[in-house]
Image 1 (cartoon, rainbow, N blue to C red):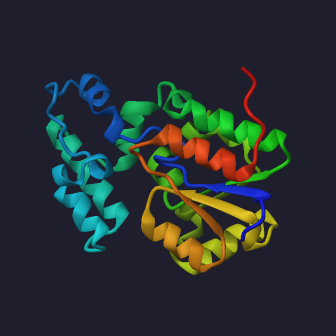
Image 2: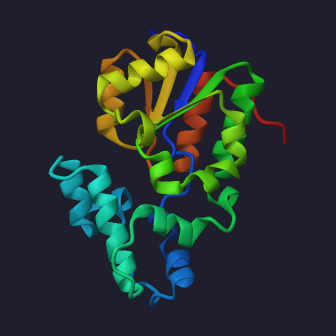
Amino acid sequence: MYSTPAGLLLDFGTVITWSLFEKHRETEATLGLPAGSLQWLGPLDPDTDPLWQAMQRDEISERDYWARRADELGRACGEPGWDMLTVMHRLRHTDPNSSIRPQMLALVRRAVRHGLRVGILSNELELFYGKSFLDRLDIVKEVAVIIDGTHSKVLKPDPAVYAIALEAMKLPAAQVLFVDDQLRNIVGAHGCGLQTQLFDLRDPDGCCRAVSARLRLPEAAQ
């Protein structure tokens, strides 16, 4: 049996932020695309998204998946050549904090108040979002550790990235709960001895409650 974690290590995109899959109607309105034109739903409905299925089979990387989606969005707007930084700039740079799941921000703040060490482990934090976006995020100021594959060049699920994160967290693997929406990253972390929680995009609220329970955090004040 695992002990109660002393640290919480979170993926960023989808876990901390709203995913693009959940925000298609807002994306269409912002970019001036026809309503209902974005139909790919990734983990919400894999049957709608053969490209997502290819990524899950490891035929393409997660970065490849989003590069293709970014280019598709740019072409739909008559601007070929978009990357994810362009997409995020168009969709989220006006108000970065609105892209954060409020229940996750509340969870992080409760964890910090309860004395836990909290970190972010992302494969493409600055690559996708840009430094100016991150500088304006309230949640970034709450965490003690940020490991970003943009700069480290070591990506999940490489065992080396979990070693880097654990060194930064200053905790043994068995005392850290790692949360990610990609099963391959969960498997990688589990193999390195971390406690793990898969973030199921079909039930974000339930996942946040599960993380809170595993951390044994006091109930939030009403």
